[in-house]
Structures are given as structure tokens and as C-alpha cells.
Image (cartoon, rainbow, N blue to C red):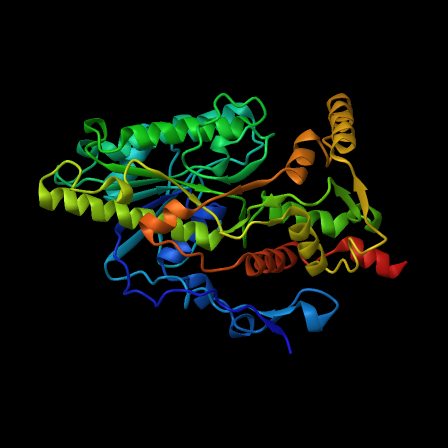
Length: 443
């Protein structure tokens, strides 16, 4: 019998939520597409053929261990009222990841004029900003999108007089997708880090994290100010996103390595393997974003009804002006995550007793440094560098207690299912799985 990935202990389904008119910025990207999907109650599942739903998914040669029944997402995440919630997506190009039920708009978020045109058409109640380049994009792109783009978007969303059709319609909630790495120096251990940890700016190792910190600080400072028309703002910091459609995160990298690497390479471990690491299923990240959006709307209503600037909100329940870390609440050993995914890619016996080569962190860092030098000379970027070594060896996990307490967050999809979904998507998208494993069988 195939293994069933059971639901986590979840609260009873609440009544459908109402979010008004929502504009998802970056709505054709990895995270943005999942935000749109969840807002529309998962049309991606409705459009799938019946054979791909609720059926065993073969993920390795040992079918007794590696078949899973993946329960539908639409029956587990809180439903959204489709009669009172309208979904729009904005992206630079809207040619991919489109879903039925969403209206798409093309615009450059660094252009105020283009954004005003979109806002005049949409008249949003809520803006959820998920736009961001990959972490290793050139510095000028990171600055342009993460800092300049966020500022322009914030300014236009708050300047309701420039786009409101009746001069009174305002955007009430602005949810910004930040990163858990805004407090990390990309070198030290992070153990149960929370929102009280200070920003790490400047960040010499990761400019991506620096730009995310600057943008988040800008968003939170604008909360409720006259400069943004009283719009309420908050930030959500995901940690290690995994899931379907990931083309640049940890899950994609691990799957790609399993698809091409020889067996001896997969039996190498950097460090002692006792370091804990956070991964977060993308649907849970979306849930966090939507819960924060709901909290901002609730606060906005209380402010309006009470006539008080803060709506009588107590500090320990405040959502506006706050940052929230979102994780799966399940830190795992980094190398167990890696080998779990490799085995589901068909790479049997990886890391088995007697086969594992453990490279001390200092030695691995030396190899990574030499690889960087060779890459700089040859123009070819190697698979290992000092940063990958560091992330393979340090503890990097966070607390999401604040999001749980203030917004009622409970992760829906567990880490194991999230990793399985990532592998399943990769094998379908890349057309057939582990090349390295196939080559080994043919020898």
C-alpha cells in the first residue's frame, strides 16, 4: 500500500474569507502564482486531469516506500469567498503561470506612471507584493526591484488621489514579502531567531538580504502615515521556500544535483551533518501572507469604526507596522532534507553507512574558495563555493510564534509532503528524473 501523507492537526475550516479586491504584484512568479492560486481556491487543481489528483505518485524504484497519495490543497487551506474577493495580478510579463479567474496586468514596478494606470483599473483594497529577482541576480537588478520598485509601489498604492475613481477609494492593506535572511550575516548560526533580532545591514556576503532589509524597513516605516494615505503595512519573512514551480531555491538545486551528479559526489557530506535548517512549503507562505492581509483589513475596519488612530489595538495583538516570520515550524537536519529528496529522485543508497565521505567544514571551505578563484579565472561558475559550504554546515532556523499568536497561523502542509511535491514537480517539469541514476543503471 502507498504511504499516505496525512494532514497535520488543523483547526476546523473557517467560513470563507473576504479580502475585497486584491492585487498580487509579481503574480506570475513562483510565489505570486501560488498566492493567486490560493486566493482563487486552487483552480490549478480543478484544471488538472482526474488521473493526477488523489492518486499514488511514484517517486523512486522502491514503490512500497516511495509512492505517496497527495491530498488536494483546496480541501485543507482556508477557503476564500469568490463572490466578495476579486483577484488581479501584476507582472512585467504575464505570459506564464496564468490561472483562470485572475485578471492580469503588465507593468514595470519601477515606473510610477505604469503603476498608476494599473491601479486606476484595479482599484485595490489589498496589495500583496511578491516581486523579487533571484538572490544571486546582479546588484543593480536587486536594487532596482527590491528597493526602488518597492518604494515606487508603496508610493503609488498610498497616493490614492492619483488613481481613485471617486477620490475616496483607498488601498487599505499593503503586505510586503521580505525574507528571513534580513537578520542573518550569511555566516553565523541562527537558532530559533525571531523578529526581535536586528537587521544585518550592510551585508557584505549577501546583497540580496541587504536589499530586502532596506525595503522592509521602508514599508514598516510607512505604516499608517499620511504619506501613504493611512494605508496599513506589514511584512512577511519566509524561510527557505519549497514547492511546485521553484526554479531557484534549495529544492530545485537539490533535485538538479540528483539528476546529474555521479554517485560518489552524492555520498560527500560537508560538515558533521548535525545542523538544523528551515524549509517552508510555498502554500504555507501564502497562508501567512493572506492571514496578515486579513489582520490589516480587520485593523483598518476597527480604526474606521472607533475613530481612534490605532483602533484600540493592544500591542501584543498588533499586525500593522509589524514583521512576521513564516516557517513550517519543523526545522530538519540539512543533510537529511537533501538525502530525502535525492532518494525520491531515484538515487538509492545515497549516504548509506560505509559510503558516506564527511568533509570537515574548514577543508570544504578551502575547496569552495579555490573553486571561486578558478571560476573567476575561467568564467565558469562552480557548484561549490564558500557560501554553499557555509549554508550546508550552519544552523539556520527561525521561530514563527509571533505569526501563530497574532494571526492564528498553523502550517497546513508538512515538510515531508512539501519536499515530495517539489520532487514530483521537478520530475514532471524536467521530463524524467535522475539522469545520473539512469546512467548508473545502464553501466
